[in-house]
Amino acid sequence: MSVKRISVLSMFVIQLSAQVIAIKAGFIVDPATATIKQNQIILIEQQKIKTIGSSIDLTQAQQVIDLSNSYVMPGLMDAHAHLSFGIPPYYKTNPDWEMYFLKESSAYRALRGMKKAIEALESGFTTIKDIGNDANYAMIDVRKAIETGYFVGPTLLNSGKIIAAFGGQSKGFSPEQGPFWQFEYIDADTPDEIRKAVRVNLYYGATTIKLVADNDRFFYSEEELKAGVDEAHRAGVTISIHVYGGQAATNVINARPESIEHGTNLTDKQMEDMKDRGIFLVGTDFPEEHLKAMGSSDQRAKKTAKDVVDRLRRADKIGVKMAFGTDVILDLPGKTRGQMNLDYLDVWQAAGVSSAKILKCMTTNAAELMAIQNERGALKQGLFADIIASPDNPLSDIQTLKQVHFVMKDGKVVKQN
Image (tube, rainbow, N blue to C red):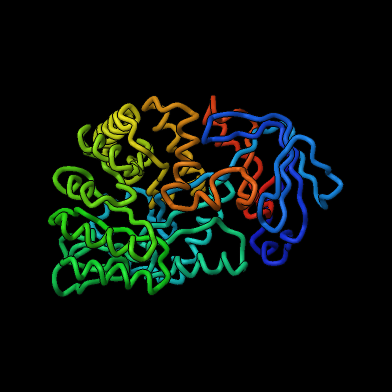
């Protein structure tokens, strides 16, 4: 079977937005309701879905795409990415790995980020929230290049630099090294400094905010966290807060951001409080294979993977809102970034989360978390035409997403068998 892949070069010149495109969909999947409609036609014009129905006149379309044997659904979303990162495997065994930031220019990392974004798109990820470690705002320029039309890539939401207590997430460096982490982080140690950090990121083009509530030495007070949340919300953007558990997590929950990132050590009570307050969990649930590739011993990787599955199972049972996020920061030989993202499906299934719910977390829920549900995340009239197709029903077998054979982004065909 031949696969049609549209090169980056051709993406500069292909102009499909003026065409009317019809997709003959054998099965349209609605992740929000876990239902399927058969034998539908999707009409696309000017990047958006014009109408969907079973008896649409195809003569008005300049192009007809036949997906009559496929399951058609909205594009996938990754709510926690670091696209400019491509750390070699086993980085944790190298004591100097944190100096990685200083060994590559922001331009080089932006080019890597562009490549990883395209890889993710080809696996069906049409929207990605890139939250931090963005090479001194370089990934914001990647987003601008996509929006300008220099190349076709996923919709990107960027947080700019991560806001954290002094030192960011680095540790153990002498004063002579200087604050090298400031290429990746904004040091903020009072409520006013946190507010200013939010404003600095927004000035440089951030469209969402990320804050680290706990690192190895410090964790933010409730007052400090509320300052960050308030400043982001006053500016009309969402905020995600990195936290693992303990008192720091309680402080975060009381501050009421849109989401908690990671939450590895959350208690049932904390997740119940999140549910009551509508706070999303983006668990970034690492597969055991990835943990080993980071440099964790087999024993430690196995334990961490078990803990991740347990927390995910508890979150599913409690009913806390969840969105799919990966946190991939390394490269694995022979795998694209999109393929690595899809490895996470195995973890969700191991936790007993149903295929239908996983798909909802990758589409409907992620769109709600990012506050773009009126633009993307569903196949509805007036929404952007971010569309993928798989050979089998994802509501009953989520693994079929590893075989996505059609990807459309804003009405442009990116991949088609």
